[in-house]
Each structure stands twice: as C-alpha cells, then as structure tokens.
Image 1 (spheres, rainbow, N blue to C red):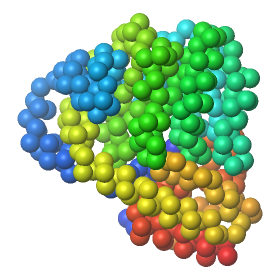
Image 2: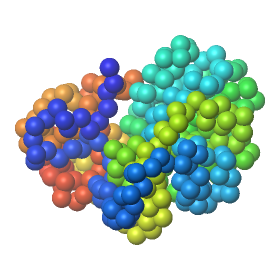
Image 3: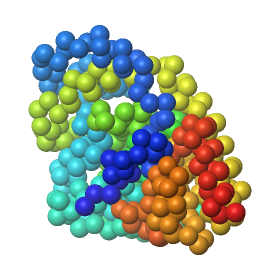
Amino acid sequence: MNFHGGNIYSYKNDRLIDFSSNINPLGVPKSFEIKLVQNISDFTRYPDIQYLELRAAIAKYLKIDNVESIIVGNGAVEIIYKTISVLDVEKVVIVVPTFSEYKRAAEIEKIPVEEVNAYLENGCLDLTCLHRSISENSLMVLCNPNNPTGTLTNLDSMMDLALTLKAKNSYLLVDEAFIEFTEGYPRNSMIYQIDKLPNVIVVRAVTKFFGMPGIRLGYTVINDGDLAKKISNKMEPWNINTAAVIAGLSVLDDQAYIIESNQWIARERRYLYDELKEIPGLNVLPTQANFILLKSDKLSAKEIKKWLLERDVLIRTPEGFTGLTPYHFRIAIKDRKANSKLAGLLKELFI
C-alpha cells in the first residue's frame, strides 16, 4: 500500500485546510490557465513523441545547453521507476527517512535494498555514516532537500559523495523535487555538476514548485548518454499528455510566479518556524523546503491529527516513512492565514 500526503479524498469536508500535501499554496499559475485556453485545439492531435519543444523549454529554464541530457516523465515518480529498472546494480541504498517510492521501485525490480538512517535528531545528515554504506556497483538514492526532514545537504558534501560512489563504479540518484524552494537555489543544485559526474542522475518535478501536482510532469538530467538512451527507451510513447506539455511551456517562463513564490517561501517558512519553536513539547526541525517535520514529546501524531481534524486541519502522519517515530508529523508551509491558524491550534493543544 502507498502512503502519501494529500489524501483529502478520504475526508468529506469542504473547509479542510490540507497541511499534509507539500504544494506551493499560490496554486496553478495564471500563465498556464491562459495558455491552456489559447491552445485548447492542441488536444485534437498527438503531442510530439520526442517532446523537443518541452525539453528545450526545460533547458532554457535550467540555463543548460545540452537538451539531449533531459528526459521528461509522467511526474518524477515515473523517471525514478524507469531509471532503477535499467540500472544493472547489485544494491540500492536509500537514505531514510524519505519518500517511500524509491524502495518500492527497487523492490519491483527485485534489487536488494539497504535503508540507511543517516539523519541525526537535529535533522543534519551523517555523512560519515553514508560513506560507510557505499559499496561496489550500487545505487544510492538521496532526496535533497529531503522529504520529510527538510534537510538540505550542501553542494560540497554532495560532490564528495558522488565522487566516492564513482570510484566504486556506483551511481547517485538525487531527487531535487523541492530544490527550488531553498534559499541557495540554483547554486546548490547538482544539475550544474553533472558534466564532471556521469554517475549522477538528477530528478526534478515541475509540479511541486508550480503548485499543480495533478498535471504530472517531471524530468531528469543525465550526462551519461548511454544511460539516458536506456531510460528513454523504457518510456511508453506519448507518456506526457498535451496539458502537461502546455504547462511546461508556460510556467517555466513565468518569472512573476517564480519571484512571488520565492518571496512567499522565504517569508512564511521563517514565520511558521519561529511560531512553532515557541511551543513547549514540540521539537521543530530546521528546514530548507516548503514543509516542516515536528516531533511531539507526549502526544502521538495520530492523536494530534484527530484533534486537528475536528478543527478542519489535516496533517501528515509518519506512515510510509522508515525511521520516523509515531510522534513525528509533517506540515506543509501555506499562506499566512492558514499558517497562523495551525500555529494557534498547536499552541492551544500543547500549552
């Protein structure tokens, strides 16, 4: 069974504020709405099977020249599954707690999985522990910034890890689904290091930062031409629908939305973190993402969820995350009104 946030369909409550799904609260960019209406006739024909225009738009957004290094997928999840299916590795090392689909993708391919709980109590990554887990002919999967801890591992440490894996004939898959929310972006992205590191696979999701997960659009950047070809050959024809193509061609060039999103996350992440830090009985992890991981001293996450649901708020409990306790829960960072309501409710519960 899959465990993910955002399962609002289980709750018949129109007033529910969904803090379980870590999506940009600015919602669908207006640029996409306009382009969708203007290009509605595009639905009368198949999309370009090679997605040349879409891949060129992604390359322009990333400010990279090699369009051939970009592969598009039906969300980042499809790319993760296809990549793991073509890699001839003896083991997949997954840094936990993290997104559950990495493990599931490896298990489907019957590849042995080693889960390394390398995040310390304060959320920092224990790099010594990670380096000890490296072996020949393996794949390491690391989410950066990590879901659910919000931990951003710095570029020097990521480079060191990638080079150590390279020396062991091993790969590093970096999931950067939330990297655009971080303060140091784009300088902290591994995309700009892959020319030196053919063993690095960087996966992104257009839909997290641009607030529309229902569109399902992800991409990967790979410097290894042979590996890129293997992944491309695994993709079903027309795996990206016309709506997702239109989305990619519009939102990636929407500078107003990008600027507003950056201002929002900087402001609201600081506000909500500071508010929550004042609550006794809650351990709040520092975050560079658009969500915060908390741990309660006494009440379980399920108890907190039940109490908040009675007050029209939904949080993410730890099911599906290896390495979390029953007292951990994750909340998305939303707009000021919603953030204030959540902070006020948690103060009421804990103080």
